[in-house]
Image 1: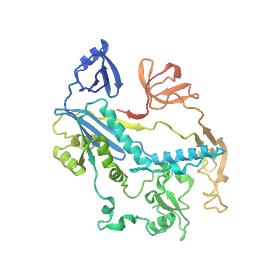
Image 2: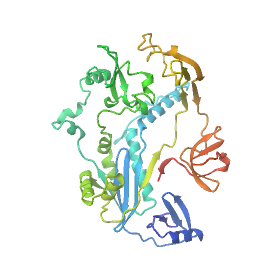
Image 3: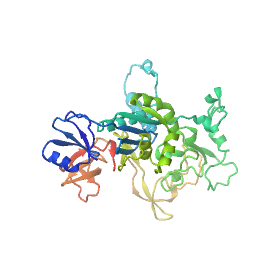
Length: 438
């Protein structure tokens, strides 16, 4: 499918006449506007007649399905993987802001300026909402959409856990009656280490509260992200990729997607001027048509698709535009004299998890042999012109950038043996924002 814009940049109906598209480009009557999805812009006056197109959106917290259908065929389909971990990045930004402002000799107080307007959303939720709007706007730039239909999830999450909930009980969350989060976690976990293979035989082990999502940067203090572990299990070695704490997932199901839709569904309906529909209707229609479950298929059904011919859906991934982390730490590597292997300093640590004189475990530093490499802190001093996921032109072919070497002087290309200089590479498309992976 080739998507077409008129000479003023307004979308027209897409076409599958690839020969005509090729002749228009070769004769100079059209130019390539986008590579994926392939879009051309006509350079001569045309009529603005279009058919009726319906956009269906299967909204969600992590995945979004999009489908555009006409009376006879599906003209666009995509599944988008949204960016996650926004809360941790916002905390990092706040940390850098505090450090920057603490260096000022005097800064005027601005506490009265920090007022939340009506309809305020948490920044992480606002980012998800804005991502939905940007994705829909991206589709509307290449297709003349006449109608938008959005699926909303409308049910009470707390009523699922407690069908008899009513009145003031809604304000009594799972921590109601506890004044300390740590005590609540220990009580919830029955004052026992939650690792099934724990070898600590102490009848009264020292318990610590562990962040379940620590391995992926989630250090939020919500109860679902916290778990009780003993001091034998909660060690730096077990946080490594070879330890059992790496990859540990929460025990109970997350209701983040449902909470997100409960908060923003009507805002999306109003901002997109969309018609609402519901999940049970989508599921029943999909089952009746015998279609396999996917976000793009749900969006197809939401848009009113039934007997229309379908197309291959695009896979879109949202990539962060800027990494604000200016400093990285690399652990030292030493030889373990017990096995002769080269290990990280975390694996042969001093036996203390916190800065006190009490040894929680055996002091393993005595097993450190020859130091292979020193630990170091690396501070980023500049931003390079080419970033991973960028699309570049080199030696007559298109390549995707994997990274840069020699302080940004050379670029590493995926599926290319050569490592060319940056000056010999031409940037075609930035790999930030919404990237069409396939």
